[in-house]
Amino acid sequence: MIKDTIISKGRIFYLDVLRVIATFFVIIIHVAGFSLGDVEFKSIDWEIINIFYSLTSCAVPIFVMVSGALFLNPKKDISIEIIFKKYIFRILIVFIFWSLFYSLLSNINVVLHEDIRVILPNLLESFFIGHFHLWFLYMIIGLYVTVPILKLIVSNKLICEYFILISIITVGVLPLIQKLELFEFTTVITKKMNLNLFLGFVGYFIAGFYFVNYQIEKKLKYSLFFLAVLSMIISVLSMSFLSINANNTVIGVYDNLNINTMLVASALFILVKEIFGFKLFKNSFIKLINEISNVSFGIYLIHVFYLSILFKLKLHLIINNTVISIISITFLVFLLSYLTVKVIRNIPYIGKRIT
Image (tube, rainbow, N blue to C red; front, side, top):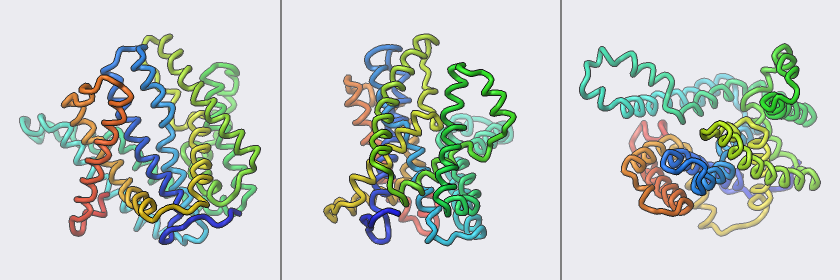
């Protein structure tokens, strides 16, 4: 088990640091994604956006790993009843509010000028599907449902390692082999084996618990760091190569469940733990990190709103330098989102429930 980590008010400090990093990474990914339409294909600016994708594509996996570390903690007694009544119910409230908000916002012109009875089917479809970034809420509900089962898995270190290994193979390695068409027969094998238990984000959820509760051997740790850097370089080159061949931008190499994303997310988690887990920092810095971490969920929910406005106003085009533009827009979106969440959380009864 791990040695003592820095804990502030019952919180593991480096998990808050990871949540803050993931928050900024999510905004950067979406800023970069929105920017793609305004840069010339295969240009230097396009390649810069490619690099930003490579550096930040691990954002959602980091969020999931932090959640896994917290929810699978054996000291945290979470019954099935609590999971549904407290956690899943809260996510449903969040989804209803924000999906309704984005559905109305996306169809505001139609809502103002058309008969509600005519547009209601489209609004309902938009509401249930959710805005593009709200898929995270569906996924997190799925993980919450599995918590009682996963707690049994992580109670045994060997079984925990076994699950992570099989998950890496089935989610990261085999799909890559199949995409490259190296061994086509593996597609038939994986379909017939039906290893659905190990698919999706469950591996990240368990890995978060594992990285918090167990030390990684130095050789494995440094090998992981090396592979993570190598995978980022390969990802940048792969996106360029695949996009040029397809004559269109291909960002599939940065999928959340790709092996390269797994390596980067795991390496970053361990690196942050090494840097922030066992050293003392100024109280002002700890308070700042805790403050941002506390509102990170709300920032995730609302940042797309401000991002859409800023890009409609073409503010990202004011600065010619792509790097400075992406960083500037990211911090502006973060600041606006942060301030808005702080205001919302002060609304009685509902503020904290929807952020």
